[in-house]
Structures are given as structure tokens and as C-alpha cells.
Image (cartoon, rainbow, N blue to C red):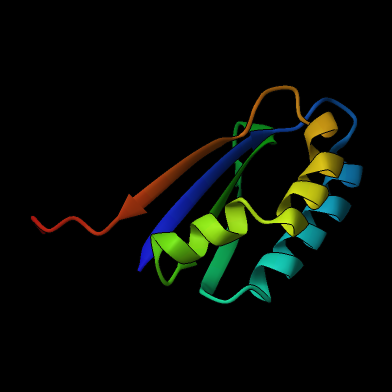
Length: 97
């Protein structure tokens, strides 16, 4: 299993529109083969700074979703609401611990 950390920053005054559309992205991701679970977190010092931590069965499953037509179409609605590019980090369990 891998974890994917997606960091986004929402432009001022677009929070409610962002919330509505980001739910659509999550609903579609949940229905995607390989999606395990996910949660969205808000920076306690900046409510426009959002993080999504998603668990995927494999990096191949994540990459299929990342590059899918469905995600591209949904992100086309979200991107204009963000004031910077999203940052995606793929994480895996450390073998040391």
C-alpha cells in the first residue's frame, strides 16, 4: 500500500465552491479500483491550505487515477480555484521502522 499526500491552496473567497467540487473528485476516486481510503485535513493556521491523504493499493493504481480522463476533467474545475499548483507526494512505508 502507498499513501498519496495532495497539498492544495485555495484562492480567497472560493472555499465553498472548492469544497463542493473537491467532494466530486473524492467521490470519483473512492469508486476507482485500488483506492483504499482517504481523508482531508485543513491547516490549523490557514484554512485555505488543504491536504488530502489517500491510501492506494499500489502506485500503479494511483497513477491510473492520476492520469485518467475523469480526474483531468474534475481537476479542470478545481484548478482555477487554487492560487498555486497542487503538490503531490507519493509515500511508502519505511523499511527501517
